[in-house]
Amino acid sequence: MSRLPSVLMISKPVAPPWNDSSKNLVKDLALAGSDFSYNVLTPHDEPLQGVGIESEGIYPGGGAHTPALKQNLRVLGRLLRKDRSSLTHFFFAPNAKTSAAARATLFVRPRLTVQTICSTPKSFDKIHRLLFAERLVTLSRHTRDLLVGAGIAPPRIRSIAPGIQMPERPSGEKRQHLRQKFDLPQDHRVVIFPGDYQFSSAAQTVADATPLLVDKPTTVIFACRIKQEASKVIEKEIDASLRQMGVRSSVKMLNQVDDILDLLGACDICVLPAESLYAKMDIPLVLIEALALGLPIVVANVPPLNEVLVAEVGRAVPPKDPQALAAAIDALTSMHTEAAQQFSAHCIETARTHFDISTVSRQHEALYTEMLETLSLPHRIRR
Image 1 (cartoon, rainbow, N blue to C red):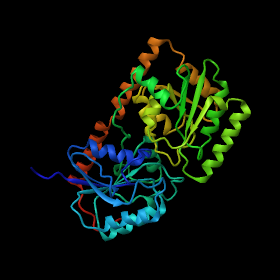
Image 2 (spheres, rainbow, N blue to C red):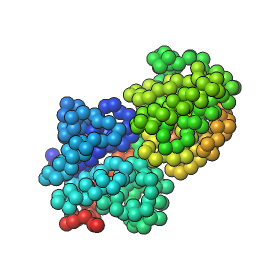
Image 3 (cartoon, rainbow, N blue to C red):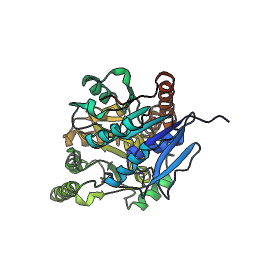
Image 4 (tube, rainbow, N blue to C red):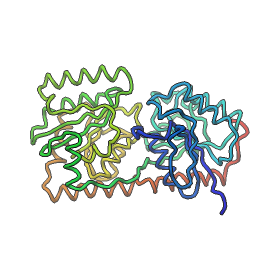
């Protein structure tokens, strides 16, 4: 049997907990691949099992949200090693330090490279300094347009939406069990906000919308992973705001949730009314997961977030508008049973049509094939 061409995937440790969109995307792309084999970076004792996957245990553990210096040095050391990979694919948000380090290693050890921009930088001023690969992958059309506007040549860019392994929608009995697991009332409408406390006003908007949800008994979940100390401060402020409004008893404030699919399966609707996705994936995987489980979604009507509404599967509302958010939640959760079931089925079908990882994998492998057929190994990286 002939050896498949291989792709070295450079990312955070590809290992549990699966609560980071960029490493989740790497995992699912590697598992879904068919025409290429994949080398993924994992902890020493947690290899990723799958056909055509070679785990390279360069990390001591699963790592934190922000990689430590030693972790980054391990990656740089790996890039300096000679290997038989056909291409190297980087997955991270562009920043000056990591981009400069990548350029340096590629100057010493030239490779054919792909760079996925998992989340956009604060500024596109002098963005070319952060982009070192022969081909750039954006997860949204909006980011692609920003790159082109900043002077990046369009042929260098591919816009490929993220994908997931499609989960199974829980049965009615399973949903009851999941509500028990997370201590959620069986007779409540459950709204989940899987966002951040920092970088946008979305958490406060959801808090301000909570007392407006009076059509039926409601529980609102804040599933917000604490990434920095500033998040803890904002979490306390949100908590105090909910108490002042007299609705704290209707809210569950969770931090890291390792089994987000189970939590989504216990909910009725997913909301992310963020005016900024800084530090989050361009199209957050949790929204796709919600759709795949049959949940309608409500997002802020700003790009690239509104690109997830590829069909009538939810609502886009103005950011910082709790009244509009509450009205959208009421509209999407007040349908009669048959209409609600049809809408849920449409959400699932939309997710399968547009965001199935098998489709996304084929798009990536088509890009890899094109590169191998049309590009030659660079002698040095453009400066």
